[in-house]
Image (cartoon, rainbow, N blue to C red; front, top):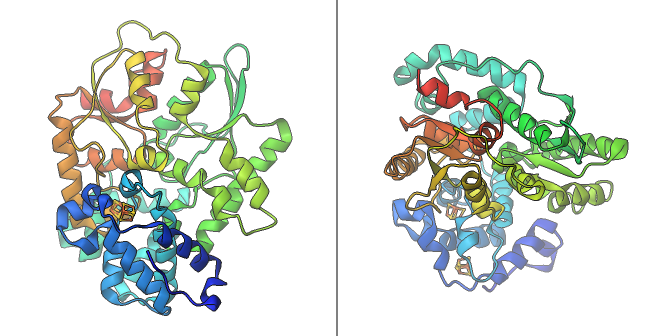
Length: 431
Ligand code: SF4
Ligand code: SF4
């Protein structure tokens, strides 16, 4: 694709990066066919190729983008399905991130939207604030139909019951038997509040496999939530805090891996080297950190799945989170591990399409998110599974709201198969 940036514009590292990405696009449109928003809306401007043109025009013109361009960029899920399909290696992820940052810096949104986005950025990444807000929202759930439009999806997503926090979920967890590896687990922000059982199952499984698991309290939100809202300074503050926490652990005793069990965070962590590439004080250590990041299924596969225990099994519908499938290209591995653990694994039609969760998308774009969520749930339920498994808390929350089938994390099933308890979500579903 031809671009027309001036030399002065190209001196800006974002424009330079965008220019390189845009020039790789050959307008073929293959990506359009696998874009969830294009499949729903049928508008070229709600597909990747259309958005690429809009972003190019917005960046070339400089200043505040036109409102329709903002609307089409806002509707993008950042699911990265287009990157899987693209034959030319166009890095749409970095391009849309640059566009979001530009929109955030130059475009003035209506007041309600501004307040909502700010509230999301100031609440979700902080465990204490999120827990308090969730408690308030769960009390107000019944009032959702009467709430102002922008608040309705937020209240509808609030769980009826907030799980009790784990007794201990940070610190050092010793390996069972011989210590084969020392790994750090990202505790996360939203996940330990909504589903503390996921980190608990991860720690049980990894220590059983001979890992000493370190969960530093100083490592929190991965930064993806604010990054996708275009709030770059907030996102980079999270990135630096996490890198600093893991540098301390690397200096203290070395780390063989940094493990993530929320694939949205994993995609972000694997990009830390890129995000801090222009910061001389952080670039090297951020690149080192990014190199050792592993999704929990990648680490389990590296160590080797032990023989499963008797009496565990059933039909699992595997929901492939976009961030794992398209963002990290971990596609078949979780299914293979579940199979080795004794489950019958089935994959739904349209496995490549997003469930509509996409970070804060189901709050900011509730109608499109609901349509995608229903479509995904129908495809999964058609498999007649005993349980739905996914590797990302966002998908689990989204599907848990629309499906009658219990939704659990892949790691909970692997833990169950190798000596842990039955996943909490399956127990609750059985009443
Ligand atoms: S990231 Fe997903 S929603 Fe956005 S343009 Fe690509 S395929 Fe479409
Ligand atoms: S598939 Fe790749 S090269 Fe083709 S239009 Fe989409 S982004 Fe451009």
